[in-house]
Image (cartoon, rainbow, N blue to C red; front, side, top):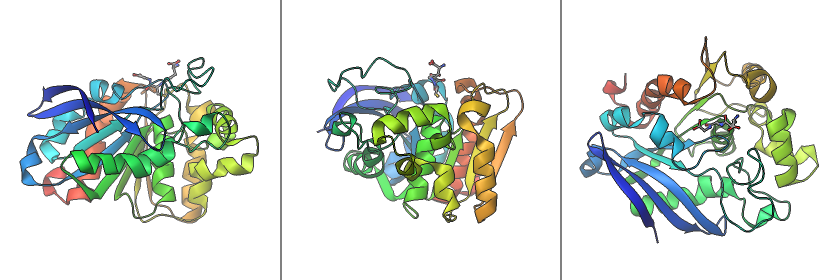
Length: 284
Ligand SMILES: N[C@@H](CCC(=O)N[C@@H](CS)C(=O)NCC(=O)O)C(=O)O
């Protein structure tokens, strides 16, 4: 059962915040949905947006300004929280880059996190079912986008499931988490100490196995303080080039890591997704 936390009119459609019990996470989960005004026109294409460290289900909906263009294009937007919360696991809230707000879109295998931190299964499997049951979503037309930790999540979800998503784009993704500090810390604690196990959730490793049949759009700010240490888009670019993965990587001079950057380019990402999901000429 879906619990409505709040709903707000926006650009002729509705932004809503919802809570339900997640079987994957064995805990309540929250997510946000933007329903554009075209809901009467029948099932709509869905764009999932995975957020970054410290975000809740609210940040993208409040800060990106995506609703105006999603309303024009008829895209249903879905953005989940970044982890389960209040699970009772000791230390869950102690660090901004691990535990609550930092689920890293993996299925944890190490105790105690494996009891609840199963965001990969939640995002790829459970959430689309919940969305299809409760909103006018056309599950066959789904795209995925994300930012930072959520950019890593979007890349991993799409690369591990060829054919499931029909469009893919990311902002400032953590591209090689098994080689960079945020990723190494989280993957070691969610998946155990053996780095071999981390590769299953590393976009640069995954793409090296071969291309998927989707062009990948990436925007990366060049004034992003995390670029060199945490994000490493060059490694992903090299891996895509080596295996023939179509990639449009736009290095944006002067932009940093935050939502001012995302808000500046979200329209172009939404149009990228609408072109693939709806074939609409107006997406251009
Ligand atoms: N220095 C930041 C790191 C976290 C961060 O930059 N989070 C990004 C995603 S990686 C974000 O979207 N934050 C929430 C926001 O800007 O609304 C902090 O300690 O909060």
